[in-house]
Length: 505
Image 1 (spheres, rainbow, N blue to C red):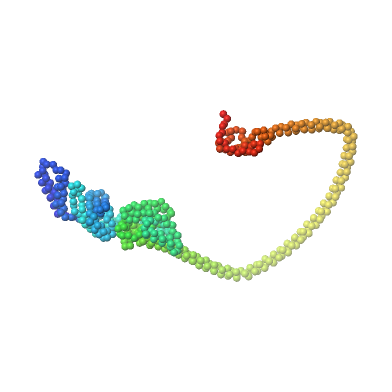
Image 2: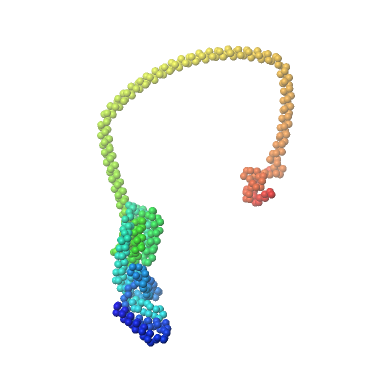
């Protein structure tokens, strides 16, 4: 490589000197300059050279040709210090691509560092480019392993590698957020195993769809985690699953940004992304790593089953303890019963004797009290009968005396005032007749007036009465358009709808 660089430097210097000496006063056309550059490059790079670069762009057209952009970055930053266009023609690409992917287990995609054998070319119209002839997959494998080690070391140095593992997984995780492709076979197997488990355990499952391979997988999975974060308090855990696949399909899980996001996530993350041999970086930082989606489902079912078994054990222990307590209590009761039975019988006998004695005393006391009360009642009854008889006799005498006095007074009054009373009665009779005549006349006038104001007589004369909501209408402002009004006639009634209201000005 150093000899080539030295030769190129000398060759370009000599060509430049020749141009300077032979064409001092001449001007070059652009095509002539490009031709000289092409000739110089062709003479220096006679055979292909091996070049290290990172793929920043990669496109394949319909003809099968692959167009790449190779770059070089500074060691400690992402600053690009060199770049070149490169091409793999279709007949070469058909051989290199499967060779590279089967060897590395990784697709030829953007972001990979590669060691390629290239022929340096310069075209007068299209400029400088590299034509890739061969590729060394072992270099990429080494670079991938190096990058993987660097990512793991970075996560460990930042102290976040085990943060998700330190979260507590609920004893019975049943509310599960799933990140997967809805069409993946592994997702369907996972759902079937959970929903049709033999124990009949119920799980609440919610899918957050994501792309699970390729360049878009990182951002898609992180977006799904962002959606789950909004329901952090509801879910018990997050499951990231996909079906099996090649190592190349799963390279997106060896990603620093995705791994770091999982370390910071507030819910335990369980992975089952199909790695049969090696753990991805996402597996390393997840709370629990399992190989396949069905293994994740079995893990969740076993977690609930273990808790169920624990509850059964607690139930059996509780029943056993209660049985022991009942047996001991029964024995204690029987023991105390045997001890207190004689004493109890003695106490009951004494109490029964005192109770009989008390009943006898009470019975005698009640009889004496009733006898005394009967005696008092008889005395009071006799006294009341005597007093009432005396009162009747006294009142009878007073009544006879009052009657004789009133009779004498009435005889005197009747004789003296008989003539005066007769004259007053005659005047009263005349006055009464006159009042009766006046009342009859007033009654006839009132009857005539009532007949004139009778509604039926007024209606018979052609008038009508209109009401709205049982109120007589006297003003057009009382109703509005479309209102229903009732009109009463001498014979029958009408119900009308108001079409127009004309208000008095």
